[in-house]
Length: 321
Image (cartoon, rainbow, N blue to C red):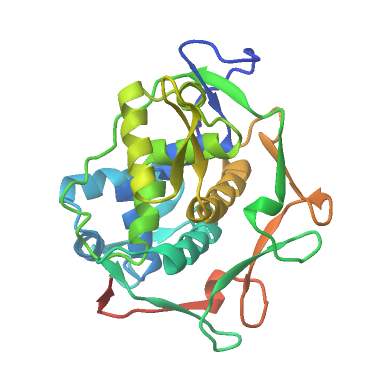
C-alpha cells in the first residue's frame, strides 16, 4: 500500500512544500466525488458495474478508472458472482468497510444541514432497537457526548512536509452530479480535496489567506474559488481583521464545525491505513475528561455502538428540498 512520500525535515513552511498528515493522505484516496459516489452506491446495495453506473451517472470510462483505483488502493475487490463463471461484482474490503464511520458522519451532517433538491430522503434503521438510527458521537474514554468545541488538538510527530505536486484527476464527473444522492451536499465538500484541506487548515488556526495557502499548497486562484464555494455553502465565514486596506480571515460556522466530525473520522481512518512511521500527526484530547479522544459512534435512541451489520438503509424514491 503506497502513500505519498513524506519528508520530516522542514520545521516550518518552505516554498514548494506542503504540510501533510493522515488527513491529507486519506483525502488523496477518497477526496474525489466520483469515488465517493461509487462507494455510496455500493453501501446502498449496488455491486455490478451496470448498476453502479446507473446509480452514479458516471460515464463508463470514468467509472472503470475509479473502480480500478479503488481496487488498487485496497478498498474494493472484484470477484465472480456466486454461481457465475462470467459475471463479476464489486465488494468492500475490510479497509473500505472501515470508512463506515466517515459515512455515518456524512449522513449525520447531511440530515442536519443538507438542502440540495437532489438529496435522496433515505433513512437508516438500527436493527437492534428498531428505531431510526441517528448517529451520535461519544468519547471512547469517558463515554460522554462531545462537540468539536470540546476538543483540544496538538501537533504530533507524524506531521511532515512533501513536495506540493498533486495528481490531476479532479472535476472529471461533470454531468453526474445531478443524480440523486443520500449524501448530496456532504459529498460536494469531502469530494473536493481542496475544500476539505481548507477546512482542516482553518480548524487548526490557519485563518488568513496566505496561511491557508502555505498549509494546503493550493494555487491562489484555486484557493480563492474554494473559499468562495465554502462561504456559499455556509461552512466558512469571512471576518475583517484590518480595515485599510480590507484584510479578511476565515472562521468555521456552526455548520462548518459540525462538518469537522467528518474530518476527524477521516483522520482516524487515515491514521490506521496511511500512518507515518514517526507517529500520529495530531493528538486529540477531550477537554471534559482530559483523556485522549477516541471517538465512537452510537445510536441516538439506545446508545449502542454502531456496526455496519446492524444498520439497514431504508430507501425512498422521493427527493426532498
